[in-house]
Every structure is written in structure tokens, then in C-alpha cells.
Amino acid sequence: MSPGPRLALVAGLLLAAIATVVGLLMLWPHASDAPPAVPFLKAGATQYDAEVVSVNDPCPSRSDDQSVEQPRMPPHCNELTFTVLAGPDAGKQLTIQAPPLVSRAGLVAGDAVTVVRQPPEGGAPASYAFFRIDRNLPIGLMAGALVLVVALVARLRGLLALVGLVIAGLVIGKFMLPALLAGESGVGVALAGSAAIMFVVLYLTHGVSLRTSAALAGTLVGIAITAGLGTWAVSSARLSGVADDYGSQLLTFDDSLNFRGLLTCAVIVAGLGVLNDVTITQASAVWELRAASPTMSPAALFAAGMRIGRDHIASTIYTIVFAYAGTAMALLLLLSLYHRPLLELIGDEGIAEEVVRTLSSAIGLVLAVPVTTAIAVLATARTE
Image (cartoon, rainbow, N blue to C red; front, side, top):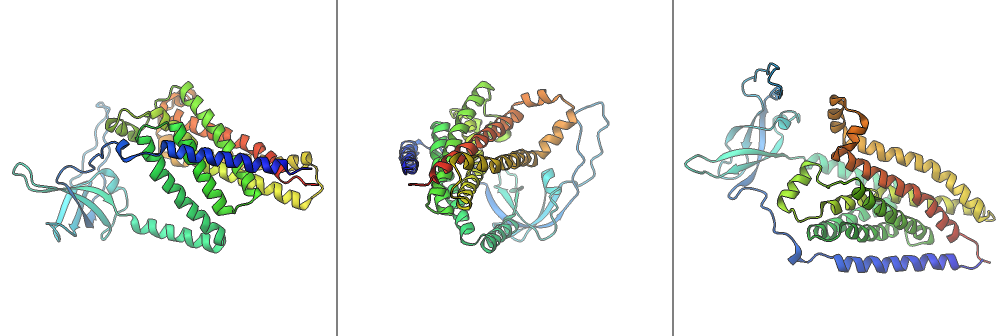
């Protein structure tokens, strides 16, 4: 048998790489295309570190129903007492009314927070407001633990995967987000950025080989399928892309953005991690099967690979659904209180967006399994 399929695989990936580079160059945002920066704080306001002295219990929630007896507010509920550590009021102990989430966060004396100082205005003295809880230490410890565990268990390959993750973050932060803010096509940005990430991450983590190339080809096909499905679903479901507070806030800053394109981009990016997992597993499975049985026919090899792939598909679908359920637990609890029909809930834009995102990613990864398996079978074919 001739090495034609392997050459076709390499040639196809070379064309995909060229298309990716061209897409990056065409869509790369310029400084002049960036929207004006939005000031985060009010003019004259400054942030300072502070140390918690005490936090009072949260105030009871009030009901919008005026016929229901409202709870009596205990004195000083939701109050936060802190010591300012820097600025003109350094060393002073102050007490402010904090948002309810602060009282429910489990803060104790000695915890670090950040407060915002509003300068004196109209004869009134300077005032302070709560800004955020300093979570850098626990998050940093968790990140360090991840690196340590990955280094001990997965060794060099795991560390390379973390490097690839950093590179993926740079592609998203330096290319995709600025390009979207500059008004470029959401689908185009997602395809170019996702392909660039996959080229770098797969070859960096798993090495340059035919096995990795087969997985990469399957991944690119899966991305294309997800992009097509996402574009159609967002359009046919009449999704606006403005379903939550973040979208609404972004709309107030720049209403010229194509929010439906942003949603389609999010659909494509959301499926990258699981898609990569599926294709790498399939390519590796086919290679190991070929090594175990060098004389196995292509048809038998494909069938054996698909038996493994079906198990992986089933577990991956669970992963997608459970991941969404975990991140949306508060929303699901809230919706369960209304006792609304399931079909009516799915019609709500916030739920519909997640359903479209999940279904598009799931269909893309399911179809990527036979595609990747077929590519890997052809790439492992014996040459005579």
C-alpha cells in the first residue's frame, strides 16, 4: 500500500496551518481599532488594601410581595469593620455597610480585603466602599499544587500541557478578545484562534508525530462542525447573545458589537478542551491497536477503534452536562422554585444559550470520533 494517506494528512494540515496564519494576520486587531478604555473607578477614587476586624451577620432578605410580613432588620447587619493599611487614612479603623455576599463569605478577623476611597466632595468627608476579598493566597496555593501534582504524576508531558495552556491563554487574551472588541467576525476569530491553539498545544504536549497529526486533523474537523452547528443554532433559535448581566453591561459600553457573533465564538471555544481530549484518545487507541495487531485489516481496526470511541463518547457527554450543571447550580435552584415546565424553561434565553452551547459541542465531538478514527486508521496503514 502506498504512503498516499500519510502525505495527504501532512498536506492537509499544512494547508490548514497556512489558512490559520492568514486568518490571524487578516483578523489581528490594531491599536486604532480598539474601543476607548472604560474607566473602572470613578474619577478621583483609589483602591487600598485593608484588614478585616469584624463582619456582622447578613441582613434577612426582604420579599417583593407587600402582602407578606417583612422581616425586622437587626441593627448593624451587613456591616464590615476594617483597618486601612495604606493611603491618607492608613491605620484608621472604619465601619461600612457591605454587600450581602461579604457577610456570607466567611470572613474572619485578619483577612485581607480591598476597599475604594471616594475623595471628599461637596463638603462631605471621604467615604469608603467595599471592593473585593483578597483571594490571591488560596488561589495561588491551588495553582502551585496543580503544578506540583502534574509534575509528579505526568512529568514532562504534563508540564508541557501547562505551558500549552498558558499559550492558549495568550492567544485568547492577545488576539481573540481584542479582535472581537474591534468588531471582527466572531466565527472567523474563533476558527483562527482555536486552530492556532490546537496546533501549538497538541504538538507541544504530545510531540510532532503522525499520531498527533491524526488527532489534530480530527480536532480541526470537529471545530469546523461545531462552528457550523453553532452558527446555525444561534441564528435559528433567535438568540441575541445578551442573556446575563455581563452581556447587558457590555452592551451599555459598546452597542456596536455583534453579540450573536460573540455567542457563536463562545460556542466554538467552549468545546475545545473536550474535543482535544476525544481526538487524542482516539488516535492513541488506534496506534496501540495497530501495534498490538500489525496484520489487522483497516476495516477491523476502524471497528475496534470505534468500540473504544463509543465508550469515550458516553463518558464525555456526561462530562459536558455535569460541568454545566455544576457551574449553573444556583440558577437551576432558582428555576426549580418557579415550578415552570421544562420546555418553557428551555425557551428562556439564558438557558437556551447554554443548551445550544452544550448541544453544538456534543455533536461536534461525537462526529469527531469516527473522523479521527478513520484518519488514524489511514495514517497507520502498512506500506508495501
